Image (cartoon, rainbow, N blue to C red):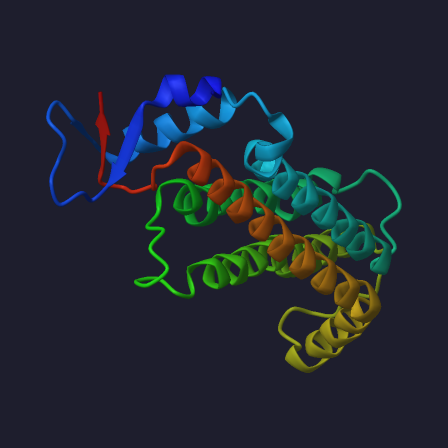
Length: 229
């Protein structure tokens, strides 16, 4: 018997008849119990996606944002350290932090303690995969692309490394933005496809790993669970 079985006892999902001596868990307690089970699992490879999924998403978003930021600064001929903090904070650190929080809140936690009844939630796994793809593409591509344009244009304006037009000249600003967007056509497409595939594959692996643990533990996750002695 796995050590996790001995630690977790039994967790029941919305039982019609609550077992005698059972303790109702709030969402935070249910999540803490699931995390304790995963961390104490004696077959680490079986729970690898669950243990390191958040770190994988964070690192993927970080390097994707870093690549977009580098390309943004290169477009405006910024090859010195000037304005590096102005680019790094909003284009790399902010999207990475947002991706980590959104993944934890909207993907990781629902996988562990969300409803698992396929009759009531037939598209749950698909929705989670789409949600993760949106999170990764928004934080790893769209946000760095937008913030990179603004921060790099501001730095280029101060260093005169690129002919940035007047902010009130909407036509020339739009033309510059179109050139900027075109320079990301190949890289942006590759990042979009890569992050979509990576995000959906990771969530699929996490759901599969979670279901494997549930089958061996013989309990279902829920935000309204009961732990029985």
